[in-house]
Structure formats: structure tokens, C-alpha cells
Image (cartoon, rainbow, N blue to C red; front, side, top):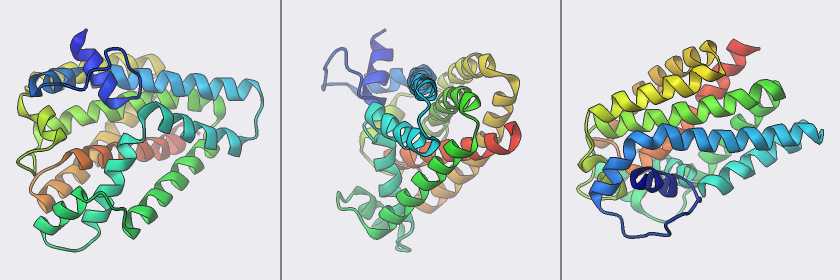
Length: 245
């Protein structure tokens, strides 16, 4: 339970222990529980979507409130990594300079443009997918993209000598990927086989992007974990739109 709470408190704003003194072993042991945290995030978003459908809010307002709900639940953690990655990768600098830019707390124009496009794509997908179908999509998407994070942590080298992402990577074991896959299959299959197929397509795309970033940066970082998760979210939504419509 302690390891699950660690994953939950890091990936969301939900608090039980109020601890801020985690060891590298704590972080690493929490990795297999990422799909379960994804299930909780997705379930909350699905409930919000269902509630907004019941009160018959306009679709645009419902989509906007869904994005707000996601940011509140996660604290914008993945958005932060996405923006930092965009600033570094799109700077067209040397590898070392890209990593420096990603670590800088200042927000550049690349980050602003990238997050604007991300939110527009996400909002557009929310509007395009039927409200009832979106309820299942939100659950499957959240589980799948948090499962993908386990793949990034376990199977790709880390680009920095230290960092929060390094804490997850340091003691992570290959078996964590298999545990995460099993949980993902169980949780997503409840939504339907098509949702598993979408997750598989999304994983293929995500691993290609992860490989590209790894070659560019000499490995992945905590920021790229967040960026890949957000890209995975949008990819899942867009693929779902074309397959489920």
C-alpha cells in the first residue's frame, strides 16, 4: 500500500501521507502502480464528464471543464514536463544546451506554442467524441498513458546524472513492465477490446517518439516522461475518434 500511495501522491494532488521525504527505493517500487493511478485519474475524469452530461452543459464548456479538472487532479505535472521538453527540443541547440534549457524554470515561446496546440487538440477531441463514449475513452486513455510511463522508465536510459526521474529509474526492475501491462490489459479491457487496440497503436507511436527523444538527448528525463504522457493522451484521443466514430 505504501508504494501505491507514493505513486498516487506523486502523479496526482491526492494526499494521504503528506510525506515529502521519499527515498529512491520508494520511487522505484511505486512504478508498477502507475496504471492503477491512471485508473483513478481516468475514473475521476469520467465521473466529471458524466456529471456534466447530466446537467446538459454546452459541449465546449464541458470540454473546457474537463481540461480544468485534469489540471486540478494532476497539478499540471505532465504539462510542466511537456512545456520544458518543448522549450529544449525545439531550441535547435546542442544536446547539453537542450538539457540546460529543459531544467531552466523560465517558460519560453516554444513551450507556450506547444501547450496551446496540445490543449486545442485535446479540446477538439473532447468535442468530436460522443459524450458517452468519451467517458470510457478517458478511463482507457489515462490507464494506457500511465502504463507507457513504466516502459519509458524501465527500458530507456536516463539522460541526467540526477533528477526526480532518476529516482524512479534507479532501482526499477524489468518485471515492472510486465506487471504494468497486466494491469493495463485488465483495466482497459473492461472498457472494450477496441480500447485495447487503440492503446496498442498509441504505444507504438509513443515508443517511436521516445526513441527519437532518447537519441536526441542521450536518454530520457523526468520532463520527457511528462511530455510523452501528454503526447500519448492526445494520440489516444485522436485515434479513438477515428476508430470509435
